[in-house]
Image 1: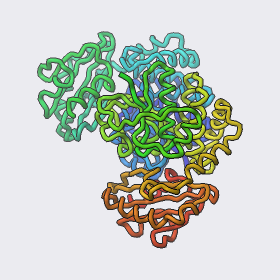
Image 2 (image 1 turned 135 degrees about the horizontal axis):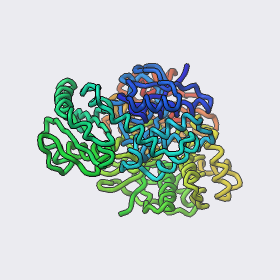
Image 3 (image 1 turned 90 degrees about the vertical axis):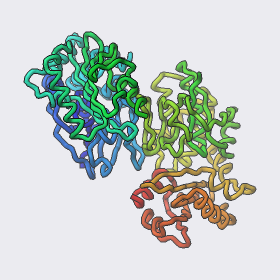
Image 4 (image 1 turned 90 degrees about the horizontal axis):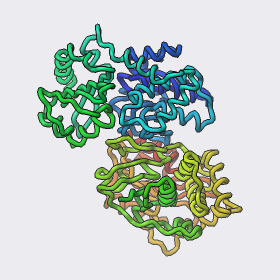
Length: 306
Length: 306
């Protein structure tokens, strides 16, 4: 019976690519591991997979009775709903430590770096294995995506070093140019329903018992969102009610300006001002230098709600 | 302000030594990390520290406001009571994944191997650092202790390989002989109150909401426990009531016979038989081949209580 490698719900590029790369690594070690996904791939991820000739992993949302490797998260809210009925063999992640627990010893590679694929590169090194050329290419893109081409405060020296190594293996001469090409695909919003945009890179968090949904959209220039902002806000209000959420937040990140506009709809009217120390007008504020949901949005929200 | 490295409550040799070794490694990396302990050291641990001229870490049971590395556990029940008020910088462990969570990214080195010190040896390698001679000596002993001189089913090829490396660094010609000398110290029960013996290597677990306490005593020959078994049983009954526990278990491991006598006092009369598939008489059964609390006692108990 094969094992599975699976990233979080509403998968971003790292969640998809880390599953593919970890499966390759484990397959090289003699295990039979299949990469799977819990949701649709984004246009950015599709661009990355196409660019390096990788098939899209199969959709698999139930893992009862299976043995799984978890990548790019360690929260039950983001893992398959029936994870409690599966055996977790290991976790590869770069986020805060979540509430997944196990009843047997396992393998956890968790590091405070910019991307799960940076850690998986270290795992290839540890085991003395070679990274296949096209796998190196998609891993390179995952790191450029998660670190916002090195601009995110989550980006470390190790991420930069690994990107150079992966670019050499993948035969990519200009990694930055590839990153900008990829973010242009990510920036495209025309023709996409507002709801799909809010949910494109969306995660629910449990904060002191409150369900808080946080979506993020990154653009080379976030003026692309101006024309549809009212629609996005309307979807936040709807999704808050439908999901019985305490708070819904959308982070509109401008990669070139290196900051984000944050839109907040919450039961707690002063939450956003307490969390981010900024003046919010109609639930909106520009937060200069804020690029990372994981490092700059979630921790202050958790603190403000605790 | 220094950071701290701390093992679990009721520390065994690995909990003490892993804190010392991780602190040394982090100090070599330029961090100021102090090893501490949450409880008294056992006679075995004292023997190990004395043998390699290491001071006993300071007692520290409160970590509010501090930044800490957690070693040899990942369960809140085993960590300092006010851990929620501390920053967890990292976890080094070889047990099942517990319920510690964090609000920021961290470093987790968790592997299904026999001892935390095996993982810390890998961390020295990863960082290209040398292990000081006496630190190698205590790490060697921690691995021999946790793997019951390689006899535990938790022992892996990596543990054996690391023991050879550490013995070479520490200048120990016969690691097995050192292990037997150490277990003879551990086997000594004369003059020690029964309660102290039950609590010597004792951990509380939360299993489906039930508090289950499990102690383990290892002896080269567990006939040393025969004369005091009634006293040990009486202490189990008392500790169960005092701690409002659902179940108290004492595992008396015979290293040479490679098995354990298990004594169970529980609210659930059929728990032990369901968990271990053996016939219990007066709450006692011999479990052949059972040496590991982590791998052979805790998982079947959790399953039987779920």
